[in-house]
Structures are given as structure tokens and as C-alpha cells.
Length: 221
Length: 114
Ligand SMILES: Nc1nc2c(ncn2[C@@H]2O[C@H](COP(=O)(O)OP(=O)(O)OP(=O)(O)O)[C@@H](O)[C@H]2O)c(=O)[nH]1
Ligand SMILES: [Mg+2]
Ligand SMILES: [Zn+2]
Image 1 (tube, helix red, strand yellow):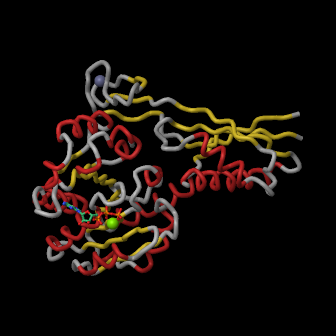
Image 2 (cartoon, protein in one colour):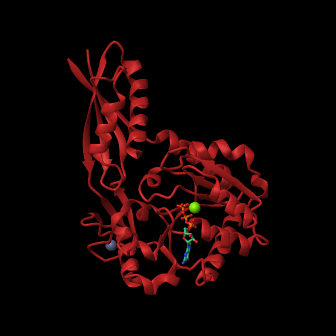
Image 3 (spheres, chains in turn yellow, orange):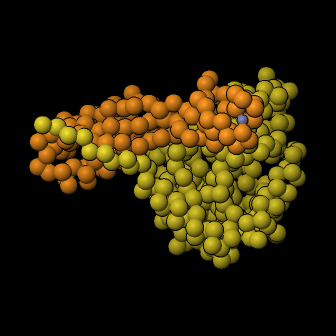
């Protein structure tokens, strides 16, 4: 005789519970938090380096630099003036999960943090289902990757609140249409906030900084 | 790669459940996987079959139900199936949509045999 027993349990329920705990901890302290995701090399670290250089006198920024193998990104962020930068080497895992962030928490001075940013592993698939307790996911796409990325990776674009189109200094070199990428992204997620940036020339970064400062202010209020 | 870590999570949850059901054996696990979960059913089954070997779930199979994407319009409240990745309200064309289904990654049930 066989019988069916209802379970109704989320596979990632353990991760979700830890993420909820992280969100509550950060929320209580009024810390705004972001989870940066993209394909490898879209410019996550570059955007964070520029952001640190520009805003470090105004905001206390804590960064967790996820990487599969090296601490290179963390070292770049420290060189850019990051005072609280934690490398998180996954040793092969293709995504970060809430437990990894949770484990780092005792080493982080949250009382001295206005903005908490996690740079996820470069991967547009695997990190999408793992809540890290962030307020928003920021998905980067660079113009060399093709303007149909949102349609190829809908899960990630759907779960993100912000899209940064980076490397716009290279637009002439690529068959990349700004109009099409916006159309494709908004088709998946009509609520996406979109920025166009170049971490090389600095174009478009003023809007990004202004938005970031506004979010931090609102979270503190 | 990612499916393997999901398979591992499923195995752990079901092993805990199987302990409670003893001496009955878990022969199947029912999963609900949303079309927008980022998980491919075939890779998940492949991963699960690989890691269940040598565990009490060696004979256990996955029964996977794929869940279609369903949204509700923030503007007019209309509930609809999202087709061809067009996340817009078919009534009022608003692109501000709340997802009701499609991101599931759930263990719906287990089947036990005694
Ligand atoms: N031309 C140009 N190059 C850029 C821009 N942003 C980043 N790059 C270059 O792109 C390469 C990858 O940038 P990273 O910032 O390391 O990218 P990432 O997303 O952090 O990469 P992973 O962490 O490996 O996933 C580097 O050589 C950067 O100098 C940009 O706006 N324009
Ligand atoms: Mg990087
Ligand atoms: Zn509507």
C-alpha cells in the first residue's frame, strides 16, 4: 500500500529563513542593501570601484565580494578605498547563498554601515533563486553581451529591481540597440529602474550616485 | 551545477522526512517547478539520481510538475497566464505585474510505501 503525504515545503526554505533574518537585521539598523548580479565581466567590480571612489566620503559602504576562486575583486575594492571589504570565495559554487553572508556577519561592523552591497558570482542563472536578504537586486548587462540578454535570462531580470547597462562607451563597436534592450527588459519586468553607464568615461554615473544616495536616505528615515 | 545543489537540498529535506515515516519507505517525491524558477527538470533529475545512490532514497523517483507563469496586474487586478515571456496585462497593457505562479521550487508531497 502506498500513500501520499502533503509536504508543501520550499526547497530553499532554509535559505529563505536565513535571508529573512539578515533582512530584519539590516532593516533594524536602517541599512540599504543591494545584491549585484551579472554575467562574468559585465562590470560589477568596476562600478563598485567608481562608486567607492565617488561616495566614500559621504557614505559608509560595506562590500562583500563574491568570487569562485580568487580574492582579486576584494583587493580591487580595497585599493579603490573600500574600508570594509570582505572577500567571499565560494570554492566552486556558482552562486552565493544566505548562509555564506550570515557567516560573515560577525566580522562586519553594521553600526558603521549605511550601504551594504554584495557582489555575487558572475552568473545570470544560478544566483537568481537565492535570496541574500537584500533590498534589491541590481542586474548589470554590458553592451558587448547582446541586447537580448533579458529574454535569455528572464528569471534574473524578473527578480531584479534595477538594471545597469554598462560599457556604453563601446556602443559604436557593437550591434547593440539601446531601444531593443530596454524593450526586452521592460517586457520581462515593467517596474525595472534603468541606468546607462560607462565605468571607463564616467558617463551616466551621476544619476546612479544620486539614486543610490536617495535610497540610503529613504532607508534611514 | 546549480541543479546539483538544489538536488542536494531536496535530498536533505526528504531524508529528514523519511526518518519520520519509518518503517515505511519514501518511493516518490512530488516537485512543483515554476517555468521561471531557473531550474531545468532534466538536470535536476539527473543530479538527484546521482546523489541518491547509497542513501535510503536510492529507489525514490522524482515526479515533477511544471508550473506555468501567472501574473496579476497591479493596475486593474486582472489575473492571467504570461505567454511568450510577455509580462504585461492583456486587458490594460500595464507592465506592472505581480507574479502569482511560475517561481515555485517546492516539494509538494512524498509518496510512501509500507
Ligand atoms: N570599455 C569599458 N570597459 C569596462 C567598463 N566596465 C568594466 N569594463 C572592463 O570590463 C572588464 C571586466 O570588468 P569587471 O568590473 O571585472 O567585471 P565583473 O562583472 O566584476 O566581473 P566578474 O566579477 O568576473 O564577474 C574589465 O577589464 C573592466 O576594465 C566600461 O564601462 N567600459
Ligand atoms: Mg567582479
Ligand atoms: Zn491590467
